[in-house]
Image 1 (tube, rainbow, N blue to C red):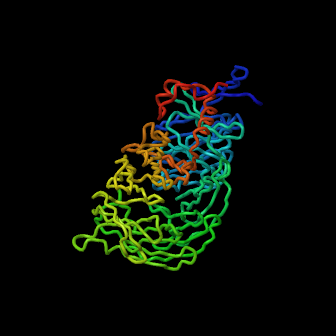
Image 2: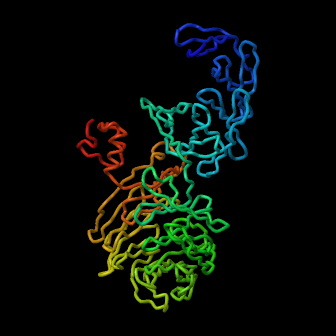
Image 3: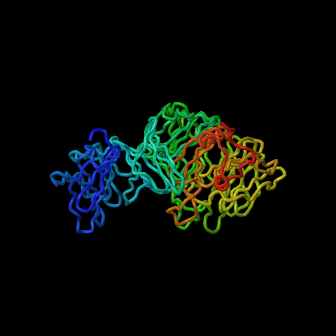
Length: 575
């Protein structure tokens, strides 16, 4: 019918074809024979405007097939079968076939004209998005890209390249089965009540599968451990530049995959990077080039004892090992109670000290927390159940100072001047103290680990008592001298948690992985996975928000749903 737009509808045992351009019936043909086994058919017109495509769905798993039906001859050809779900491309030349295999699913692309497979089958590897159900929601015009929805996140998969192109948060709604394109961009179109939404699915380079990521001190670059633990990468953080690779270095085999342990540490001046590549192996690299300077093999850490209480809320059952830089740029490793100091550029051991001498001689051995102190050759030692935090010179084993705190202190963090410290009590309750006179100034604050699986950031910003906490969907800076919150960025509830969630527990908050030293850049993540580097720039946020909503005022419902109070004056200038 040339360029005419057709629709087809079944009327009894015939198919009636309407030409929407002329409003007339174009033709009438026989209909496929109705099924009597309980299966149902969904109907499309083929790309040739002559063939009909039938998605025939039966009961049970992998019981869906795509058939090509030729009305003049009443012939039927199987395009794809043994599937759990099938979605057609917008041009009806290809189909995305999803089949259940074991405890997962496999997606494949087939050409409708002959059923030939295209590209490579795709199966989800990220356990956060792995499901035993077929989840294709919408397909691109040519079928090469498909949007999958799981746990309030959309994943755009390229079936020709067999990779995930992008992941964005998206709450549940009613959606079109076709991805829309405009100006070179791809959109997922949905509707809920009177609202129509367009969710952009970035189609640039494949997303970087990162296991752990930190910021350089100025926030200008990220340093990442890839999800499989195979390599380190340095990339810029400026908008539109994070596809650029500044430096890359392979990691030691077998790869230590990122988990709950922090693998990466930067020196005080930001020039050196310490990477935990094994249970007790630390590599020191140039933070800009990732050139390896030294490899440190520390003492083997003791395995966690059965029944040992967890350090915060959860016992990770990982060996008791830490590493960090001291103020002089040396690397310190802590294996249980043994502290070793190493030259960062040569890997030579400079000193060692065993804090076991500070433990009680009777009863079960308590846990210890050993951390940096802002003075050469010194560490802060906290013994659980003992309110006295001891400052120890590791070159002599001498306790040089004792700071008396609380009975349930778990760990302390001193500011660069040594005049202030943050104290963590059982339950991850944070308090902020001054040294002289010794007293608590702020706290107890809300627990930083109400969800033990969600990363948080706590750090001093300077030597003037400014302490930052990124947790509980907010980034807040406290002034110990002012005894108040000086600055607060409220993220609100994550979008994937505002609707009904698959979780049976309390909504999970945003995760915060790292902050720049000036507290102007944060690495965050939505509970569903998407996230990245975010400059804390309210003016830029305002510009982007006003652009997105067309410089209009907020509706009453929008005001109610925003996480913070909206000022009475217009946020966006008209026009």
